[in-house]
Length: 452
Ligand code: 5AD
Ligand code: SF4
View 1 (cartoon, rainbow, N blue to C red):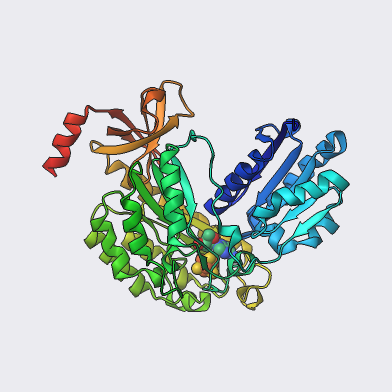
View 2: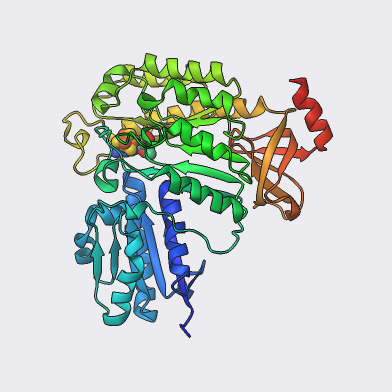
């Protein structure tokens, strides 16, 4: 019998990375690895990284530093996966002498073979070639029922947009969509395993199926997933404003399971900066799309990403960003200081903004958004919201936690028998990052809903 081994995975960055970590874990489980949350117990440590911005990239190197002692003590195998692995390749092996393995963004399916090589010969390995056959997109399915209520499902990967600041097209490759047959098969399988919410993932989900006449369009794919028994909720991320079609906006009013939430990064409110970013839309056309979304689905929550201090950004450009935020009133905003990324156009622009200006702008923007987010949350006080319960709350054993359809976190008193259930919850108190509520009987909920 094969000896049981333990793997510890540390993940930085986006949902795609979180999902990749889960896929690596599933793959390793069928090769006699069990997950451990304690790196000291691990036979294998994987650091799954992000290089989209500077901050998560630095974390990789500090994590590697932390694990050096373990390597010396236990001969733990150490690997780096994800965007930094893809970007740096062999250079990472040269730079970190105790690193055993570099797994590029398309190399996840090869993980067992790479590991086999190391175990047999202690050879150091690196795989960063792009796979033209799309094997890296294939599902790695759970064999047993999963304890999870939500699951990510990759529908496409890569990006063809080449925004001038962004490294994604270089580290994830060009857009490639999975076949709808495979995606639908995976969602059905997940539903059978107990998953209630499917979050469809891709760097540019509205580019789904592009270039393939035979494939379903993204709105049609959503319709088909909406028909799958057992799945109660559908979400997707991330959308590019340029590719957000009227057909896609329309499905928000049509599909019952599609949650009223869209993440639609705007990056900047200044047309001049948007042009230099190569975003392909203007502030006005972005606002028009938001308008159409809100008209089609008045309850829709809108979140976005924004960058401050992009090269050449003047006070006036920054004001336009604040102005756009004031107009849209985002439910939440993920905001970043621009960081130059290797190989991207914007890194070569001569008019880089000073670090302290970026810092000040970020802080002004975040303070304004904090207020807006709180007000948005406060507007829900007294409402009854449908909450999909995900598990025990971190704050109290007596509470469970879940999310509204608009993706807001709600904590309320309840036990673990509620996990996986849709519970009507009256919102009693709003906080900046979550809501407090109390469960109400379903008859009351139905009455309320029919009142609307
Ligand atoms: N600098 C700062 N933020 C960036 N993002 C992408 N590239 C950069 C960069 N070079 C942000 C964008 C994107 C999010 C995932 O990360 O806002 O939407
Ligand atoms: Fe990067 Fe732009 Fe593609 Fe988004 S759309 S992944 S920001 S290149």
